[in-house]
Image (cartoon, rainbow, N blue to C red; front, side):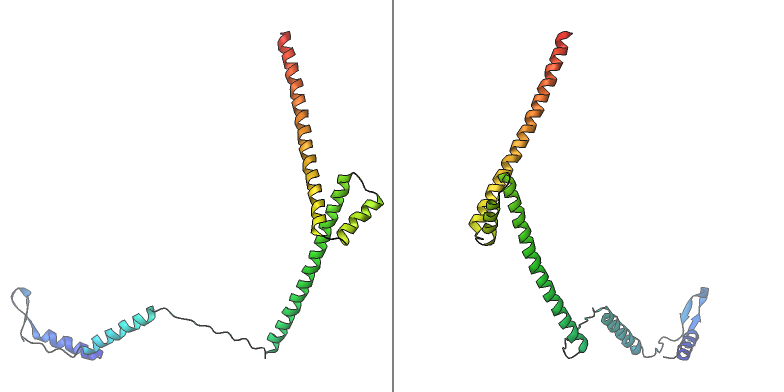
Length: 182
């Protein structure tokens, strides 16, 4: 519908309305001819459809392809494989070194438990860890060392407690003497 058509329509409506008494408009012609308004309802329906289409969630699907034919991809995969192998070897050797440190720590604690060691004792201990490497012999040594360390710790705690108690007893004795003299 054009603007000129709308303007003409309003002029026709104005001509059909006549002012009656008391400035109350009265209609002269009983039936006003209206233009076809089906285009407006059609446009309204299209507008509602567009609004519904906009409100629908958008689905984004991404598909990635991995092609070894690309030089970048090929060299990246080779580089990551080499880095992985280097890491695996490094971890393996670190685990062996850590196990050696644990064994050396246990040997040191065993020698300390024995109060010293002769050449023969050290050779026997080293042979136990190197050649006889059975779980039983090492676990027996570990149990002996742990038991010894636990007993030494308990003895130190009891000695400390006894010193504290004797100091407390002396302090109470002095207080009793002071009270007695008053």
